[in-house]
Image 1 (spheres, one colour):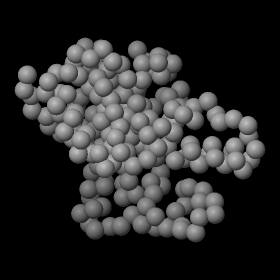
Image 2 (cartoon, rainbow, N blue to C red; image 1 turned 135 degrees about the vertical axis):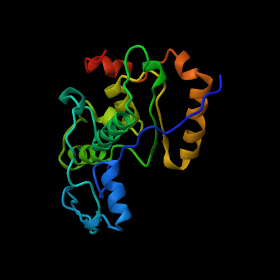
Image 3 (cartoon, rainbow, N blue to C red; image 1 turned 180 degrees about the vertical axis):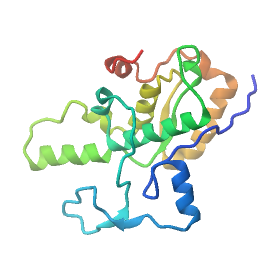
Image 4 (cartoon, rainbow, N blue to C red; image 1 turned 120 degrees about the vertical axis):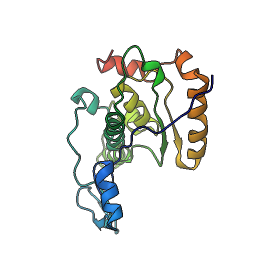
Length: 197
């Protein structure tokens, strides 16, 4: 089965804005997001200038899911939600097999990793917190998007250098209807633990 693959919605967050339209507006006006970093504890770092998202926009992510998310997963879910709403799409029991998340990631949940490093190696805590692994793994953002929207098709995360492969493989899945035939439910155990159906 041959199907066309199109981008139907866009979402984004960065130092320039907390939605795609505000980012585009700031870019068109030639604004820079580089400024002193104020929302992150820099500890002993000498560099204090960068681009940061200074405020998280309003969202409807349940607290039960938030406790298992690093900041990078939170940002991914907010951006995916904007894209889904902009496209006018909704995921439900009848079409969940047609939705999956494909992400290029630049790293894992560094906030969680830094917090764990400091608590164990500097503060003498004897073990990591319970959600350290699911919050810190590079694929966490794709998994959290799938959990929040209850996607049932495969979800994946690849290092940014492999982004070309993401752009090649996922349209192939859609065109071949492989996503609709899979019995794999990404994050099934996590989705159940968060009370999602």
